[in-house]
Figure 1 (spheres, rainbow, N blue to C red):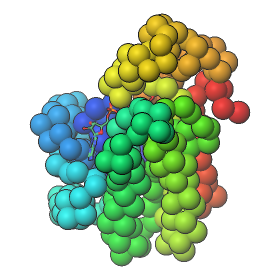
Figure 2: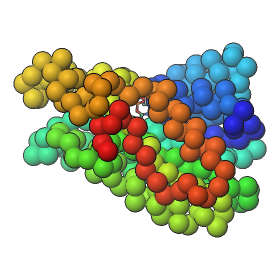
Figure 3: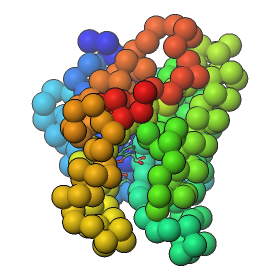
Length: 259
Ligand code: NAI
């Protein structure tokens, strides 16, 4: 049990990568807050964890809404008595060439990926600092925190930006024993990616099979997708690491796509 009695607040954890992280954390002894826009799905994920012997609650939150973020973190603290781990994971994808991107979609992307990360970090740090027992902040970046991509200007911009936020939190948090790191996964076949495959096929004028082989997996060492389980293992390592030695880092988990 690497996370026994730790409290983890995981955004966007009703589905996909976040859900896998929440389930693994609970298996490792953490009390997990499933914080998601989709309250029904968050409650269902929490119920699955509880049914298998873990501790979890679902809370409704739109990570772009300051009041909702503060209220959901306060609720988590009330129920579980503190916060030790934040996984800032909630995200969406919108693909368009830069010259066709609407300003509204640009702002929506930056709001979820960057404002959401800032707001949840601020709300959780206050509790971590006050508790005086350290903590771990984990951002869900992407290979696109390090590499360019066509059609994804705000995503690439925001995912690069998370590295800056992470490094600042690592510097400021060190004296409180709070670490911050970024996970940078390659393509994982969640709903977010399944939606992109036909969209990219249409925009690029190629088949869905070619989007997978010639765009998504082209530069991996073995032509494989990264899995939610791969990403969850890295999230566990960052959460459980015992000292400030591992902070301010961004780790790519992508079958060697970026190395
Ligand atoms: P997903 O679509 O399977 O799950 C995303 C979850 O976030 C959903 O439960 C959704 O309800 C929630 N969500 C969306 N907007 C929200 C908001 N405003 N407030 C609170 N919750 C919200 O997506 P997936 O693939 O699991 O993505 C999770 C994170 O991983 C995202 O930040 C994404 O950019 C990142 N990522 C995903 C990769 C992939 O290939 N799937 C690769 C690299 C990074």
